[in-house]
Image (cartoon, each protein chain N blue to C red):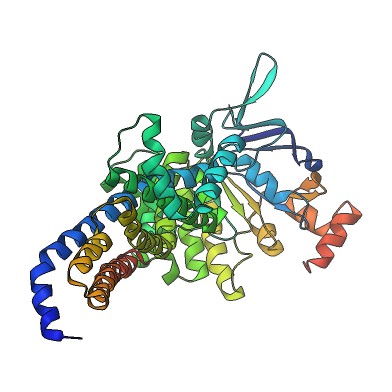
Length: 255
Length: 218
């Protein structure tokens, strides 16, 4: 089967500071991969590179076989024009730690914006798609509410609906529960679990170890900008090979 | 103060006062419109432009803000015609006021853009929107709401500064008042009336601003 995501030799630096130092990763359709690791290990940056929210200086990222962000012309690596990049970005959907809902639009407006202005759908069609996904994340009752009228968990569910309504090849979740009150975490995790059961290909950065253990087909442990260990979640969590992973799991109190 | 004499005189001159007020409002409105359009573009250029464009923008901004409006007005009245541009006194006044307004609006607009959290543009990018669409659908509505009070402030400043057109002989409210007073010598009375009219215009403007602000609230 073809890979949905194929990263080879990814390198990214901020000035002289290299934060991703050669990452290779492949994901098949329907796979759920969780990236764990301590802060500053490069996990969020990796996700942002895949969504082209960051420039990267080396390596290739392919989504569904399509090379994104850069091309090689006359042996030189050049950035694609913004118009192309915008299309590349729509191949993946992203949910953010801070939700980033548009405050001047209702839940429904948030979800339909991309459908109408990127996908070019007519209003009725966009609303129908948006309503379907809002229903799916349990937010159809509140589709006409503005973000400020919603709890954190509800906002995050709308944000997930906004990303997934675009029908992306791959969903990226960037620490989506980190900004939530503890009692709101589960409603969001349930939505993600539901999407996983449905066969959505997903890449998650998370600090919820128990959830990563449950939902993932593969877990990646990142450290200092490289993948330090990867494998089956049961294997990784119960018999970590490296000392560092064992320490990390010990600190995150995974039993 | 002879009240009855004042009211008789007021009954005589009110059409002129009205004319002056209309001139003030018209000139201010034009200056605010041109200044806002140009100022918004300038704000965009300073916020998103490349370094050379930004530097040009800042130089313009500092120059305009560092110069008294009266000097701008005299300069545009006496200097611009030297460049071969035929400008009426009113035209010269509007030009100077527009320049003054654009500097204020550019700063307000730039500040408004800076106040929108970066996550907004990222989320919009993430669903595949191109930059013009991100600007139009996501950023501008938020900038507008954020910047409206400061923009109304700038508009009020322009109405007040329009009184300087009197110096270049544009018969707006202040000059009209001066002409009236020079004939009837009722200085205190008619400068008070003049002040009240300015106050009424600006009060209307800020009330209108409050109304729009409420409509834009989310």
